[in-house]
Amino acid sequence: MRHERQLELLDRVAAAGPRLQGLHAEASMMNPASAYTDADRFEREQRELFGTGVLFMALSCELPNPGDFVSGAFNGVEVLVIRQDDGSLRSMVNGCRHRGAPVVEPGSSGNRAGGISCPYHAWTYELDGALRARPGSAGAFDDVTVDCGLHARAVAEKYGLVFIRPDSIEPIDVDAYLTGAEDDLGSFGLADYVQLDSRVNTWNMNWKLVLDTFSESYHIRTLHKTTLAPTFNSDTVIFEPFGRNLFSVGLRKDVVDELAKPRDEWSLLPYATIQYFLVPNGLVVHQVDHVEVWRGEPLTGDTWRPATSLYSPPQPVPQPRQPPDVRPPEKLGWSRIILDA
Ligand code: FES
Image (cartoon, rainbow, N blue to C red; front, side, top):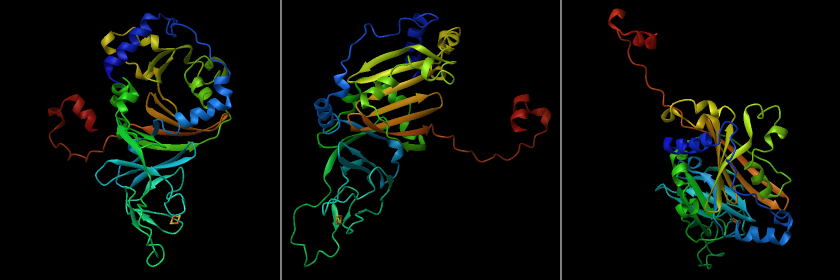
């Protein structure tokens, strides 16, 4: 996050006073329980948000090399995104054109630089999804001349983020989707992060209830009484919408100490949990020294399957050791002597 943006947010914290009052939204909002329980509404969400809508798929750093792929399921559609030889991405349905078997393990990642081979009868596809070969088709079914390439889907990549439409080829305008958050997200340099760990869970919660919980710190003093509560503010978050998405900043209690410094020395990042909700299925969280990414799939109206991944910033490349300086120590400055020791 750029320093100017951090200062802008900290100005708001400073204006809220030592108890951080006044950082809430301007008015409360009532949400009917049916928004979480209505079956018809859930079906419509699945169709319009998780089917033809724009979904967050991956960080670019998960697919650095030609042939690298990630796959996932969205409203029953298995989708595959794969890096091409020219560095671009293609997205396609993870379903063989022969009998529909997944061409890669659903929910997996890996590399298919040599081409994509279906495990069922070994039909083989190029990285762009074009059919390369159908073993044993000569004299059998080579009279089938229709295009048997994998069905394409829309994909777009920008600011180190990858987006898809699981059930559409309608182009994706990432800037229009991010609606002003692109500078923030771009400044983190997510394309160069390194994935550390990933896990999948299934939780018995409506998908919106999960995101609601992430967007408030109100529960911290009770649910996280002995862990987060001693150091984390439970009363407030900074909140901004961007398009249909949400930006929020949770704060450590000692953020007020930072404000005692000269303004141009302020830094928000050591005190903040910075969250970008990429509605409907993504959450990118910057936490001091790492980034946490959540991708969620609603299985039913009250079941949600999140995949959680952790990433670290790129590590410095070790430099080769320099030959020792043979000058007498008295000609070296103190700092140089200490560094060489
Ligand atoms: S289903 Fe893929 S080759 Fe038959």
